[in-house]
Image 1 (cartoon, rainbow, N blue to C red):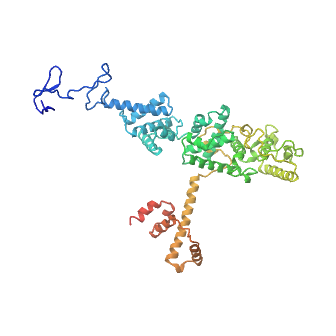
Image 2 (image 1 turned 120 degrees about the vertical axis):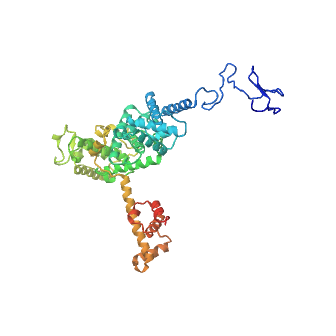
Image 3 (image 1 turned 45 degrees about the horizontal axis):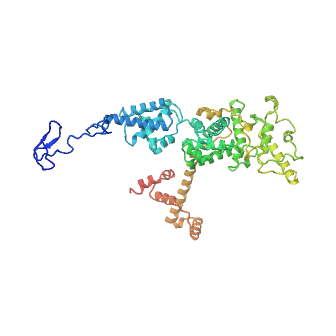
Length: 522
């Protein structure tokens, strides 16, 4: 028998046949912790097991692989529950994870990220909107880390074309509106109108390339905030951004871009020169109505001119002329709005092409004439004291907005989800250029100007006798003022030029790569 007695260190040990314990024949001491079995949960509780290689530990009857699979499936159920998946969709995610891992699953820090990526890919395959940022929030991981895992899953499954459709931004807006706590107390009819108006504006933003190459959720938040204001629903852009899992700063930037795009369309209205980003929200109903009618006229094949767009002339112009002021109804010398429609001649009216007398065709020139005639008469009334402006009087309208039922019809095809090709064929009165393309062109132009200025500075230093007199005088004035207007970018450009880098490469703006290649490696 190997080993020695722990008391007398004698090697005369023997095993008792009855108890099975190891006993020293010299001193008679029973050796401790030999043949030990743990008793758990009392006398009647389950017996423990010896810890051996290949088992999952004391108190478990599962081996390592079975326990790993059990814990992995718990992680899958937990993540799919946070995302609100049904039982069938959760099973699809589990099958996808099992396929990728070849049935081995996993328990490392990477495994929850894999589950989140499989959940996103599974929803994307079914063309159901699930933002990646929402998945990252449920998994509690970095968004970029999740994105890299999604790319690996897509490559492993070899998903291409129809098998992996593009992200449904319109469906994402509908989902955000119906699931957002900010709209939980809104009436069903108003909520439905918000969804339709949101889809209309969102697809207009897509046509203006405001979503091209960008994260879609900030634009979704911006559109929801704007249409909520138009429907007198009080929401905060901070709350909406948090609910759609987007950055607040990016949402505010997209909101400004959306307003600027609406201002460009509003410039085509007779009072368009007065429309700015500060008052576009009040003018937005008329701009949206114009875009809606424009898209409907193109869809019906009536042409692309505003004069071919049928509008309710009496209602539209009356509302437009009152866009800034609310007047007392007791003014006796203020004539009815219908006087502005009593123009001599009937060249602007074509009742034969309308369904009824109230549906007329109107041109830019006619509407502008009506508007200027109204302004002239209002100026005369104000100077004579014949009208009193009443501010702050809502008369059933809040913050200067008109009811959506007065300007929104919801009959345009843009109120429904369209394919990109169909969307590009519809004219809404304005064409956009991708902001990223514009900013890139401006950056190229700015860098080119800096290169020209840097070359002049280098020439002035290396050949001062050949420098133009005007440049020398300007340099002296700058030195007297204490500033020379040179930034770190100018110094880098000068360094690259002195090291013989081509101007075309500098214009691209990859300064770090150029410095490593041409300066630090010399």
